[in-house]
Length: 424
Image (spheres, helix red, strand yellow):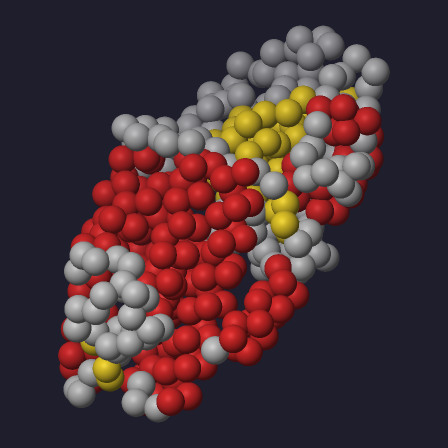
């Protein structure tokens, strides 16, 4: 066991050197405001942790980004980010007419639920003639495309005619065309020329169909699970011993003492269903409460508690430190994970009237991701559950590996530090 522990800790250290963020995905938030005179105001929030990975903003490598370090590299940030976003109207590029490079512009940082973000702003002039209506706007988004294929750009757009929408772009889908309905002729800001009297008044487009919006958020929920390393490892910790049963044992027992393989696969399946159901009910409760703004604990402490839940679940596989029934423990941990899931929805800035499809779709996507994980792993666990290989390498070694990773996450998040060159 000492040899396994050393090997797994070394593997953990190597893995951390290149690991992605454990729970919160890499997202940026882009708002496009279409104005008269064929201009688009761009407001783009990009996580400083992601920019630091690319540009090494932390000059003294102390794990803390200061305002001075960010401000001194503002031009580098702008030059890195702006070429990865292009806007086109009628197949012609929109040109930048003002930006944060201008002397009068001041670098700005905003705080989201998961940390600090650089706020980049500029205005783009599109090739739309005076009096001509906006036909469409093509958004080409390639931020971090070469280094982080899981990164997403959450794009919100709106027009002066009260048309608006949201689209998620990234490596699988970098280009999207925004189409407008009943768009009015533009007004030239210099001459203030009014549209002809015969022009039809602007009309708000019909809302996005419920099923289309639902499906979009189902995909987001599945994506969130797929890149949520800490959430996946929490579920794996539970699944590893779901095919076993353990009578009550004192805390000071030898590692994994008392665990016995369940004689029938139906018993293991019943245990999995109890755990998944408890977790689903719990995280659905807090996801809804957080999304509606009833409860909103600080993201840093939520992420710290999530790391703690992974650590305790892994250690409990080795020693019985959690004395309550496992489904009760999983329900309590699920309440914490629900707040973590809510962070992915809160930063979308959805109005309360828009929450039905996002909440339902995102939750369904999370459940589909969890069920896919169970469906893939459970048959192998059932097949191997009686073997010494499963006991000592899969459960023993795997639980130690998960616990070591969770411990690093916990220290990073509680103390806001970087360990092994990776930020939590």
